[in-house]
Image (cartoon, rainbow, N blue to C red; front, side, top):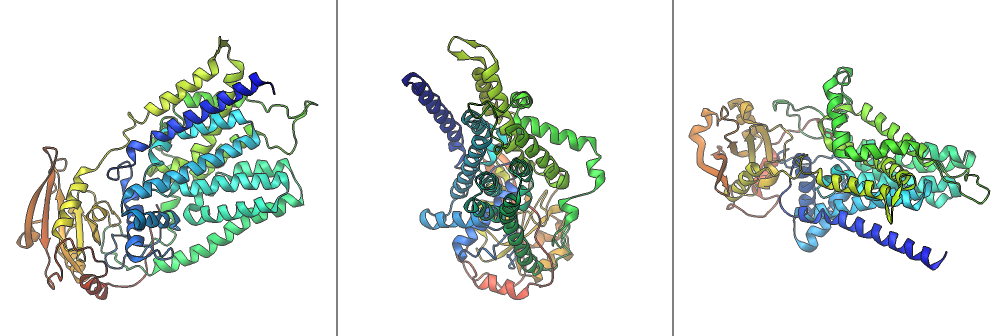
Length: 546
C-alpha cells in the first residue's frame, strides 16, 4: 500500500470514528432527567428492579415489582442489566442514569457485533456504513438511552450470530462456545429476539455445509435452548406463586399467556394494524431515505475475493444474509404480532437487518454514483440520510415526560410512610401499571379511577393497603375521586409545574393500624410491610410479558 493510499485509508477511518462518536454523543443530553415516553411503563419496571436489587441485595432469581403489594416478587426476564445497574447504584447512588448507561453500553455492544458481522460477510466499508446507520436510526436513538433491557438481548443475539458464523467458517469450537454463551443470555433475557438471527445464521451454515457445521451449530444453539427450558421452569414456579387477585380488573394468570404473545388471526387481518407497523418501520426504523438506500442494496453484488476473480465459497453472501435476516425478523413479527403492534420497541430486532441493507445500498451508491471533484455523490447521499435520521426524532414525539405522574409520585412520597402500601389510581391505571407507584417509590396496587369500588377497596385494605391516592387531571374531566372515599380524605393537593396546572392529588387514609414510622423513611421490610405480608393471599398467577 502506497503512502497516499495509506493516508486516504487513515482519513476515511478517522472520519468514520468521528461520525460514530458524534452519533453516540446525541444520547448524552437525554441520559439525565426523569424516565420518559414512549413506554415509560416498561422503564419504570426496569428501574424498580434495579432499585430493589440495590436495597435488598441482588437476587437474579427473585426480582421485585412495585404493583403486587407486599408480595412484590415477579420475573419478567433474567435481570442481568438491572443487576449491573444496581452495582452502579451502590457505587454512586440510586439514579436511573445508571440504568440508561448500562443499556447504552449494551447498545454499543450490539453495534460492535453488527459491525463485526458485516465485516465478515461484506467489506470494511460496508461494515462502517452499516454501523453508522445503526447508530443513527431514530428508534435506536431513543431506546438506546432508556432504562430498558431490549438492547442487552439484542447485543447477545448479535454476538451469537457473529461467533457462530465465524465458528462455521473457521471450524472453531471456541467461537461456537462463545456463541452458545451469548445465545443463552439472550434467551434468558428475551428469547424472541433470537428468532431474527436464525435467518443469517442459516445462510452462514449453508456456505460451509458438513458434519462439522452441524456439530458446531448444535453447540451454538443447543445450549441456549436448554438454558431457556430450565429458566422457564423457574419462572413458572416463581410467578405461579403470585397471589390470585381476580377481583382486580384485567388481572390474569400470566403463566405463558400465548393469547397475549401471539394473539388471533383477526388481528393480523386488520389493514390498519399493518399500516401502523409499516409506518413505524419506515419512519422509526429505517427512515424514508434509509428505506431508499436499503432498496438500492438489493442490487449490491459480492466483491471478488482473490486474484483469480473467484469468490470465497466459505464466506456467506452479505445480501443473502441481509435478506434472510429481514425475512426471519418478519417471521418474528408475524408470530409475536400483538406485542409488535402495541410496543414500538419490539421493532428493535429490525434495526440490524435494516442497517445491513442500508450499508449495502450506501456502498453501492458510493461505487456507482459519479463523483464531483473530491466529493462522491454516494457519500453525500449517505450523509443526507444520517442528517435526516438524526432529525426524525423530533416529529416522532420521543422524549415526552409524564409530569402529571412524576409530580403526583413526588407528593405521595412526601406524605405516605415508606413502608405503607398504597392503592394508586389515575385515569388509565391497569393492575400492572408501575408509572405512579414507581415514581412514588411505594409498594401497592394500581387501579383505574372508574374501577375503584367499595368492594375492591375493602379487599385491598384486607391485604394491607393503608392509603388510596387518586390523581385527576383536566384532560379527563369526567373522572373524579369516588364519593364513598370522601370521609377518609386527609389531603387535597394541586399538581403543578412551571406555573401550569397538571391536575390534583387526593389522599385517603384507610382504616387499620396506624403507621409505625414517619413519612419519607427509607427503610424496606419495616413493620408495615411485614403486617401486609401476613395479610396477603397466596395462590397461582404469573408475570406479564414485557
